[in-house]
Image 1 (cartoon, rainbow, N blue to C red):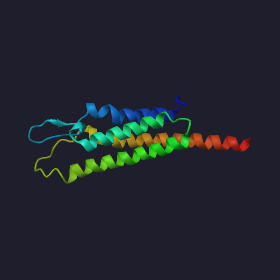
Image 2 (cartoon, rainbow, N blue to C red):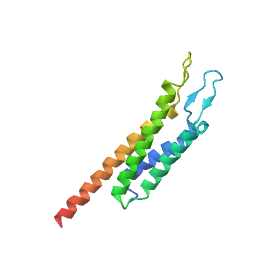
Image 3 (cartoon, rainbow, N blue to C red):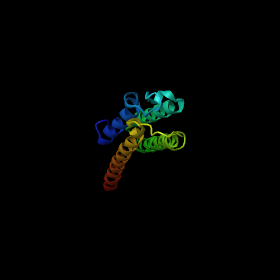
Image 4 (cartoon, rainbow, N blue to C red):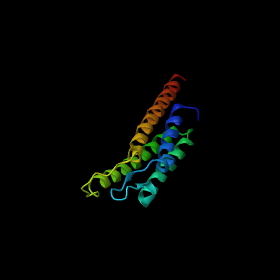
Length: 137
């Protein structure tokens, strides 16, 4: 059902990865101080789009709780991969003497992971409730 709490969590996660990367920048370049958005790299665009798509598919597969659970886990894995790319970029590719300004867009996948974990906990609760009711029949 679409009115469950896990749908709200997944919707927030989808908004975090689909709409907010257009608003918040990932980092600012040191020399010219221009913000760099996720559209500057193809891999960032692909991963943000893939995470959003998988989460959206998970929202509308509400009749199959196990599928929804697995899709959320897949989305969490993609979020960790995206975080890995951000950490790699931050730690090893900067090579600058001045510190560049990191944007809030770099923590969007971490916040998305939190909401997807909350959604998976709610799905697990629903699954346990259905199993307990089936035992009584």
